[in-house]
Image (cartoon, rainbow, N blue to C red; front, side, top):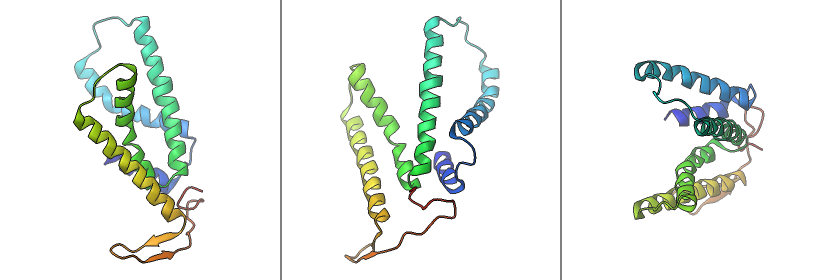
Length: 161
């Protein structure tokens, strides 16, 4: 629910600041939220190794800076309905990488879930493409009409063009 709200608000309000700055503030807010939990749990007993530091750098640079920069770029250019469904690809991608690179097995339920998620993303993209072409379909009928695209009050049309 919070992610959907964030996508919708970012799309509606636009990016008044650079995506990297927005990402930094969001991650700072998340870190502040986690501080009480860290205070209760305490720090790990083991010392950090070079492997740990490399892992943190990878997560910080690739998993956060690059990923969030691309995410906010996508939010700015795609309709909110498509962006929301793209979030489903995170789990599918993680499972696929685990299967391909780590040799992990997938249960039939996991494969079915991946197919369902991919189908939802494709359906959302095709529906958005249909609407951006100006086609309007009246549910429950075979009536199709052509509608003009309306400009958004946010500087770009509602389809991110």
